[in-house]
Length: 184
Image (tube, rainbow, N blue to C red; front, side, top):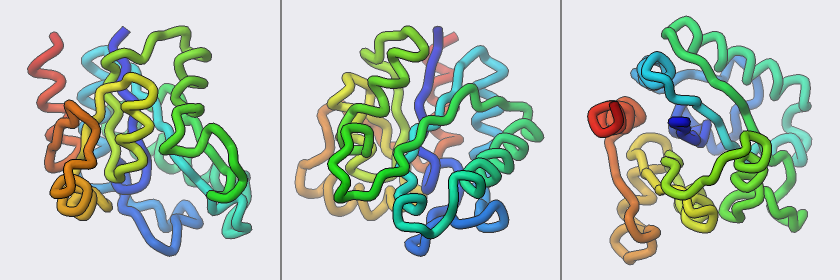
């Protein structure tokens, strides 16, 4: 099975320091829905793994989060793609859960539920915690320069903090192009 795991905010859609709190605030990054479409059409299973502490912080409800994800799925479907599953950590940063990235719990849950090994599975994120979670779960870390990615590259990259083997691409479209050339 060809599987790719994507962070949501900053990879698929524009991020906001004030959180994405409604379907109307969910705005796709140009080219990202189409990239997912190309991957889906080439037989890739696309899974989203996202920290959504706005639920724990009381900024939006699970119902609203579901509506945001319904919008995301529709936009991706309109571009010819499919999101096969969405995994979320809705805990706050101080709750001590094991599923909040940079910890690998959410990724291990993906492996268990999909009955796959994560060794070498590409995980695309825009933050150091995404890449750290990827490395902890033995995924292949991919950094995109959208969202917080450029800042991550300039700070963590310059300090040598990126996990070994991290691949860097401009955006999700470039990741898809690279993967589709490498894996028939």
